[in-house]
Image 1 (spheres, protein in one colour):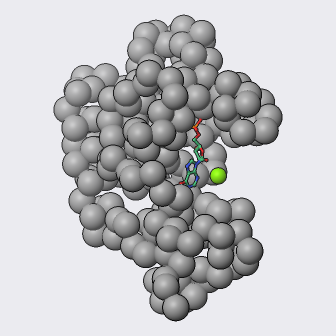
Image 2 (cartoon, protein in one colour; image 1 turned 90 degrees about the vertical axis):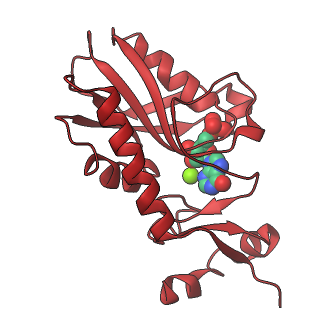
Length: 191
Ligand code: IMP
Ligand code: MG
């Protein structure tokens, strides 16, 4: 039987890359105190590891959003369920995302953060599905340039499952996963 999913980025690759990103971000922001804003829930795992690799004072804030249908239909506009509860005037904001796909969500959230008076708003994403981009948006910090495959693990879900997988898996058989969303639970047992 062909595998439903396979490891795309293993936990060691992720750890090394997150460390590199943290060092680069710290170097680029030396002497400043960046505000890291993460979108729940997917970004939480990445943020937790990333901030421990940034040797600078940082602030962390969370946003939660709900989509009106899919990103393309809504042009990336989302309903903000949880908002940053700090004054961003004059601050250097880093929007931390698990994955940028079409780019619509990140573009919308960046514009929201800019409208709060931030001095700068930059984007850091663990995964960049750049081939799927429909708006011109290039994140400043990218963990991995991700192939056009559905991925789960390390914060990323399918129907709220698999965020706790330590590796990032690419789904080989999306039909099988749609049919049985729990089909990958054996991957959790062996993780
Ligand atoms: P977009 O860049 O506006 O298209 O939306 C990106 C959002 O879609 C991400 O924050 C994820 O919630 C979701 N997403 C896109 N691709 C994947 C994937 O491969 N696995 C899990 N979620 C994904
Ligand atoms: Mg999701």
